Image (cartoon, rainbow over all chains, first blue to last red; front, side, top):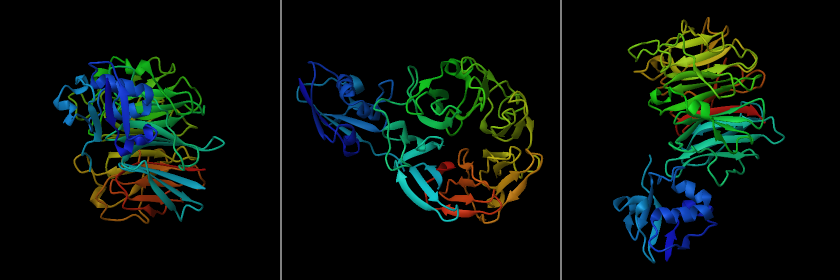
Amino acid sequence: MRVLVLIPGPLRQTTGNQAKLEVDLPESATLGALLDHLAARFPLLDRRLRDEQSGLRRYVNFYVDGEECRRLSGSDTELTPNTEVQILPSVAGG
Amino acid sequence: MHLLAIGTRKGLWLATSEDRRSWSLSGPHHAMSEVYSIAIDNRRERPRLLVGASSSHFGPTVVTSDDLGATWQEPDHAPIAFPEGASLERVWQLALTPDPEVVYAGTQPSALFRSEDGGRTYSLVDGLWKHPHREQWGEGFGGQAIHTVLPDPADPQKLIVAMSTGGVYRTFDGGASWEASNTGIKAYFLPDPYPEFGQCVHKVSRHPSVPERLFLQNHHGVYRSDDAGKTWTSIADGLPSDFGFAMVNHPHKPEVIYNFPLAADSDRFPPEGKCAVYRSPDGGSSWEALRNGLPDGFWTAVMRDAMCTDAASPAGVYFGSRSGEVYGSADEGDSWQRIAEHLPDVVCVRAAEV
């Protein structure tokens, strides 16, 4: 199945300036599997999004069809065909 | 050219000067990333800057520059990563060794990493990470971290680290085994004030020509060791307070040290708000206040890595404050001038001729 990933401006230098990534995944893949797939192509992007134990960085949000993944099942959130995953830095800092 | 690298909570600034009187400032580099650690390796054909930077959004990393900050490099894969069981939060220290390819990193959570490629990528030093004391190492307000790494200037098998809390540890076998080394250092906040480990050591310094003599700023307490850290005795007499964070050696005179006292744990300002560096000419037996050019009404603090010297002659001394001011002295501390102001909280400074 194909899913769409939207990359925020501050991270586009890690994707060759691509703002949108179309990714082919096996059926019933999870958000974690999507990030694993992206990690193989863009390791620098991956470590901006996840720590070395594959934990999602606290102040990066992952909206799965408009719902932040932590209100779903986090990395285990299941994706469906044509899911849109929007990555956005959260509001944080001072 | 003289280079002063200033790490703050929101990026890195680089100050350059030909005469250490007039400075030009560039920055922020790595804007909005906190820069807790800097090393300047000027032994290479092209000096290398190594910087530990952490973004609150995108995590920690180590970046390097071989063109004095014009461009920065970092590997695609994390330069410092725990194999399992922990995640890197912050790089507190980048320590050069006599071998230009070997660099150590002290991290939060408390761990030591070793690089053999000039500070680009690092591996966990297993012996310290698996130390049986580790579960009992505590967390100060700044986080649980190894903030001091002192490679031996002559023997690569010897290394000293210090952490808050936990105290001082030494290895004599290249990091395979470690022993706590805190005899004489007080932990007033524990039921047993002189435990084997658990002290909140803030900084340890030494001069490379006298590696067995160490100077230490504790969470209350200023100490000296003449046996490479085996035992410690107080050198706080003559200081207005035994609290503070910074402890720095003069680059050429092993007996000269610098300290920035704060009134107390519960009063983290210079006494009476008077900005003052204290210098000892005799290894801590006596202290003198250095205030020429430094302000009153200085209601801020100087953090553990926010004071340094350069290797010039006469020696330059520099410090930065939580209020974003940076002061420098081109005459070993006798007189001071402000180099920068209105920066974010300064947490680290390093200076060198490049």
